[in-house]
Amino acid sequence: MDFTKLLPEDCVCLIISLTSARDARRLALVSPALRSIADSDAVWERFLPCDYQKNISGSSSPSLLSWTKKDIYFYLSSHPILIENGTMSFQLEKETGKKCYMLGARALSIIWGETLEYWKWTSLPESRFSEVAELRLVWWLDVKGKIETRKLSPGTNYAAYLVFKLRRRRYGFRQRTVGVHVNMEGTTSGEVRSVSLDYPQNVPQQAQERGDGWMEIEMGEFLNEHGDDGTVEFCLREINCNYSKSGLIIEGIEVRPKNIGR
Image (tube, rainbow, N blue to C red):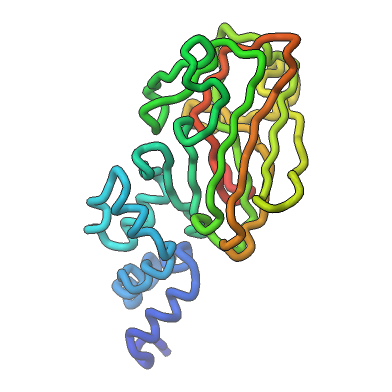
């Protein structure tokens, strides 16, 4: 018996919306009777975060709001859109619809970042942002970022990743470590992890290729329990003044659900 003929359409719509984007997509493919309901805006609106309209309207792609909700979902799950005057990006994790952000280099606090002899702001075709930060020469490396937890999906374990690359001609990073940590505002400082951005190829790598022309390395993780916990702070630091550092290019810091790859 086909239950779709026994239940009101709005009831079927509610049932499908309580599943997942993956389930709705499968239903639309295998059941012609359910296709129009499974593809409807009423269903896909439930899979989008409650603030998606705010993010889109203030983004580089406001015309997305005229699309169907299903098309918006799949566009955001594969194309980051720029927000906050182009200094951050927003997208969705494809399977769960959870929110992912990247703080571009311009959204970070970089010690001496505006001093031309230490850092250079430049554009690269492989970056989603108009500018990235290239390290010319420093002894003291200190980069910080932060994001309000209300922007993130509640009940989600997140991880933060430094997104970077190294110039062929670089120094100060080979077989040396830098400190990274993630800290919830108002709590005891999080564990500082020592990671290497530049190890020989025959050594297991901590940094991973992303597939978009950049590398990433995990800075730490945190649980966004209710979404009202304040601010999460991220830090990259290396303050050994016995040697200088050069050749690091920072695109930003990405915050996404833990174990979701790029």
